[in-house]
Image (cartoon, rainbow, N blue to C red):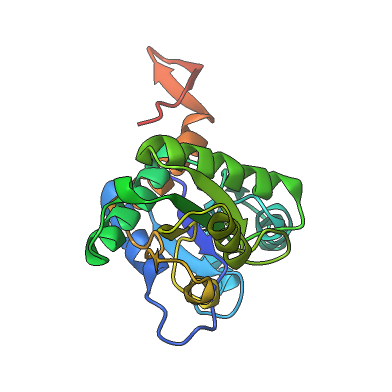
Length: 249
């Protein structure tokens, strides 16, 4: 059975100087999946485009490089696959405990740089991108609950667009309740317009986005393995053909 190619698709950003997170994660994924063709692309704003990433590929597995199941995951990606004529999409990346651990690590790093520790924080605001749809908002709420469990510190969700509270509003709410040391943890995969806006939230400090962490690559690789492992493979034995599930790797 021919190995299906993998395409990792992200939204893209127009923010100048943004780090090449998708490119770096895709390279890490290629190391985790030897023998698999791994490409990356963007829905908008950056190159390669999704169409360029799909070019010449048959039946690609598309992993949405998104933390929430919002509009781009539910509409743009299926539309791009339909236009291409073959392939299927996996689940997006969040909320996943593995990724929440990275968010916690970024927060610990930022706390150390600020001369404090996470355990001394009065509260944390987990800032997601936001959506008009209930599902991705609920997923950010779930991520906040996972982060609170990981840190042992109260965590509240906030959003950068389309819903409330904003990160600034969430920080102000903590302040009104008497909290003094409040951190913002971006629930964002890469730097861009949204992550930079968090520095106007008036928090005590802001952690870095998740970035090109090996744990993210492992989740992408796992999504791929789940997709190909759920298919039916053909096993030939003793002159007979039988159907058996393909191992998930």
